[in-house]
Amino acid sequence: MSLLKPDIYAAKITDITLSMLSDNGIKGLLLDIDNTSAKRKVHEPMEGFENWLQEMKQNSIQIMFLSNANPKRVRPFAEKIGLPFYYFTCKPFPLRILLAAKRLGVPVKHIALVGDQIFTDIIGGNLSFMKTVLVDPIELEDGLNYKIKRYLERKIMKNFKKSS
Ligand SMILES: [Mg+2]
Image 1 (cartoon, rainbow, N blue to C red):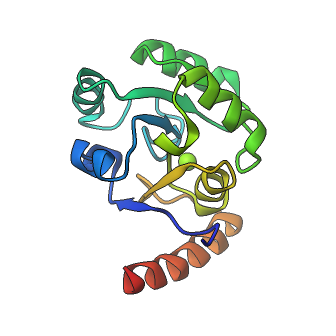
Image 2 (image 1 turned 120 degrees about the horizontal axis):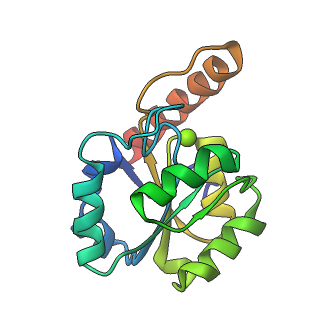
């Protein structure tokens, strides 16, 4: 198993379907916020998110937010949507990811970590023995750091798509 490899790829979070989850034995989701559930610095979730969330909840999928961002960003966002949350998670380090899993009440092998970044979300999920779902970032960030990361992620995803 490669730590860099997601189990599932979806263009956006609202493209994740119940059958994708059941095919992979997934009963719980830990959702990244920035660029996965909402644009960065935007307080509303992306279009269609709340309908998608309702469908997941109605089918007993356990869900919480798991963000590396600060409480000022995470708390009001998560409370407005009505989901439990962890901030300052330090993804990809497994400690707080595993604490979140415990709080979710679902065994790790039945949880998927969903996010837009291979180097935090996907590695973090894999290190925690979870499934992983990679989504495209809602919008591309500026800055050299991000450009380098995105470049590497594109290369990895190209190989992934070729081999699956
Ligand atoms: Mg993100």
